[in-house]
Length: 226
Length: 97
Image (cartoon, rainbow over all chains, first blue to last red; front, side, top):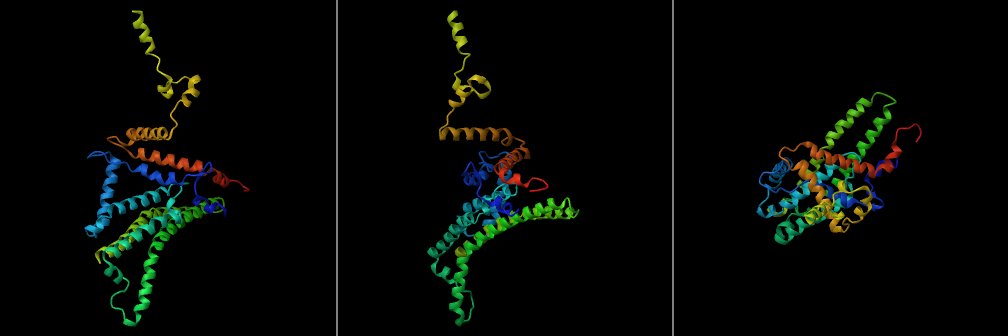
């Protein structure tokens, strides 16, 4: 039981070769490219959803910030599809690995910060000091704001990892508890119901993607629009 | 007249390399398998052909249904089950583990 808890999170191997790359590339098969003006149903639905989310995501940016829309939409689609595929039984979720989330968070965050510093140096440095602080508090506050700036990529990555890992673990635990309780008592009905509700709430992994991209969006927003 | 019949009879026999799998006789199967293209380009071509065959049959149709997508997801689930069978077989229902 102790070893079984974390085996879904080990690197998937097949005949001794890690196939993580293949599993990461699997969601690409589920998003075909539109070829015509009017496509088949799957592509139409995906196009409609993409348009909806991209409008929602990018309408608060000025034209310079909207050049990032392709990046944001592909990030969003990747994380959504990976998390939703991880809801299938026995599947491996790449976004539950901290290494991968750090690899996504740090370059993107660094890109926004560097862009802000290059284009609007004074304004982005001025962000380090909130408005209207007493004079004697300024040095300490600048340090605090710098630390909070550097924590941003770490927070992005760890947020996603911890959420996905914790929810998967919880489902495993509650599911095995249900099976163990079947022979003992009929509180299992209650517990199965808990699993059901947890699963539904977990489908809001999509909401987590919203959180991810929105946080990223907020930092870019701050840099570009002042 | 005889030459025309000869040519006609020869056009019935397709070279082994170009035969489809269902037309290969059982005795010729090993040599057919060995004659396939196993270069990376050949394997990529095989995957591409397989993908488009499935796509054009189930998804790229006028009234596609949820079955096209769910077959893919079911196959993915089965693949993952087979991959993790070694750890899963300890979780069978028995009295003493």
